[in-house]
Length: 327
Image 1 (cartoon, rainbow, N blue to C red):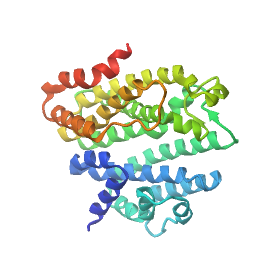
Image 2: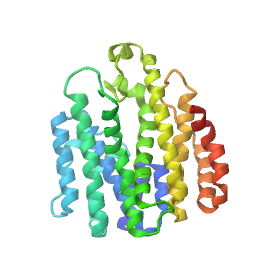
Image 3: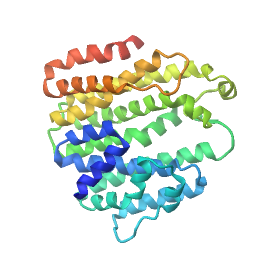
């Protein structure tokens, strides 16, 4: 099995839906996007290895970033402690094969490597900040204000939208029908919107784990009765909706049809997830879009990617209920 084939096997294990989107991408950006996802997923797995002390995980993250930035294959990245702390599953397989990911990184063009190092620096900054904010003291903590949550969503996801856009602009000077700066801004909001969907979906579970990413002012009452967070939750759901509107602007501006497909899929799934969450007032955990619905949304994404005349129908069908009902 070739190095790239092994890489995509790892990608399929940790995210089947993203794997499908990435496999559709043109070859000139496919490796960089896959590497970016796997490196970020590996650092996230390290950050979440809660059996290890916070300081030890932060040091692992620092060393991991240093190895990626240097791109030195001579130094094997020792993640034995993280592997021991990780339960069996695709994330553990990814960490066990991180050297193969690093080998693939060594084949990336220098300009791609620079952008990969830049985005991973921001992501690991966000992950480190997350550990410091929520694990410095015992008990449940909440982010202090809106700016803290905006900062977090940018560092772990908004910067990914920028990275994607920069890679594409590098490879296609005529990448989009909008100016580069506007695409970078929409790409940033694209990533932040998807991250907010994750935060809203996972809020009950995160709260039980001692983390409130929503900046609630009545934290003690929310811990005792999570439904009291609903007004704040709804406020951020509306903000996520606005960000996904920006993501739609991004999708329909993209020229390469394969890239447009890969962008449309997560936007459609994000909108549908917001619909499901909004229909469940008790913040029930475990809500997700069914595989049948994902296949349906992928058909819409294919249609939008190939036939621009379907864009208004896609917006009415997928966005109208999920986003415009907020206004």
